[in-house]
Length: 206
Image (cartoon, rainbow, N blue to C red; front, side, top):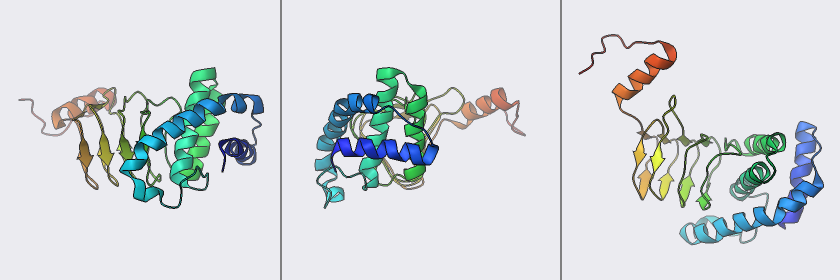
């Protein structure tokens, strides 16, 4: 499936799912940048996950991993090239409806990333992510209050793991299934107190 055909499919899906007509000229204008960004990510990540791409050597919108990445690149280009929040948000919503992932159009995703299974992936805005990011199903990268995690380099998050708060994630880090990388309990208690006027019973500052 060629990228231009996929752009037509995106516009058809937006029309049928959200009853919104979008500009063919806008999508055609964005096509080169979206295709280049997708292919650059694909070429660099492919050697590391080549078994996952067996039988899918070309771009194919029916491959959910590839199409979810393509839709995020598209939504991101719409926002940063045109600051068209309405259309960017529609593409983001389409990605969520089709693949069950929350990837904000203005998220600071890296240039090189891979989504083996998209269902349940959540990425917060303002988190600066690094290249060679791999997210499996049910993974969360989020904030707590105004605290965001920071990253030093390549990261793999296996299913249902999460990184939140002001966690500092080292380079070449791997999160095993269902694990959580979180801020300290004391820091969390302070944020809960500030946000919700909630006090832990028996909490004592040291």
